[in-house]
Image (cartoon, rainbow, N blue to C red; front, top):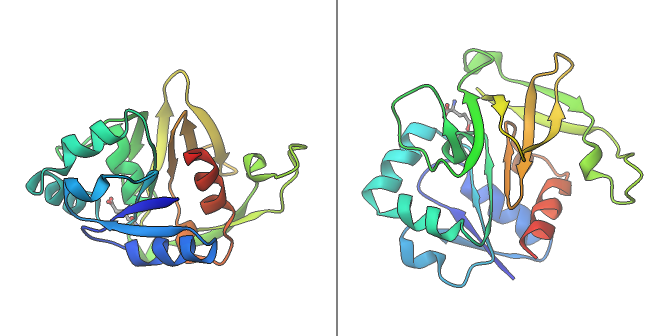
Length: 193
Ligand code: GLN
């Protein structure tokens, strides 16, 4: 199994390390040809405007859309924005996932925070009980709304959505690659099978 990590900007290196801890080979993706033979793709956190512009420059926008027709794709933070169909700003988006996001929904960089949240989908036994998930939010987006066929995986106490899945697409507002908890990477690896 080989999972690509979009390596245009942002914390792609940390995703590759997380995959390695699971014994999964990660491959840096910078050009359309790098997608050949991959089983899935992770789009890291960073700056979604920059990632989008570079993706356009390198011909990756259509290549990733094509790849998404039959492969799993996971976007974390800026990556979740890039996956979305709408972000209320003029910036290149993949538009693969039927979610609307609100960028920088918690304010500035200094308003970044970490919090434990319940994510029943991470329970491995199927009984819905999973230990709380420690989620890191860095100038994070919220998932403002989801379309039909999108499952909400996690919300904050306020009810606002921070993780969602639509078939082979996964979006998280936070950064699983920045903690030692590998449950989200396992979850995605399972999605690629
Ligand atoms: N604020 C960034 C954006 O809007 C996302 C931040 C992140 O990926 N940690 O693209």
